[in-house]
Length: 102
Image (cartoon, rainbow, N blue to C red; front, side):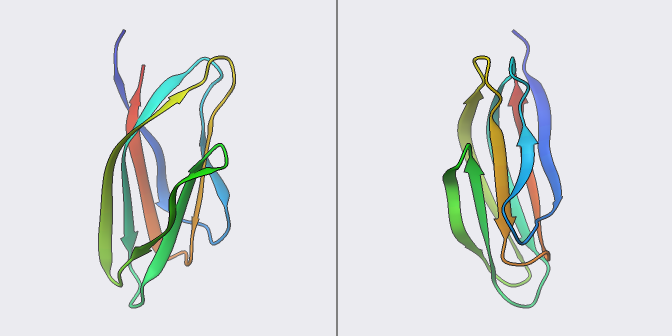
């Protein structure tokens, strides 16, 4: 079984909870990194969920800084698609979510 590097989401965060990635119903994936970059002069927050369960809840990102989180969160579809959703307190927060698919 080959591992393939995958970018699940890259771009500005929405200010409301938005779908960032949905697996195929036959796909198995693992989120390995989440990076949140705040380009504003004030602090902001980020929330990321998988199927409605928060894995990051209102995590603070300092003004003009980057927060990187390494993790190993499996998205095992088993015939049912899994959805990554997220949002931030401002569109000045950019998200990069990456991992691998099997």
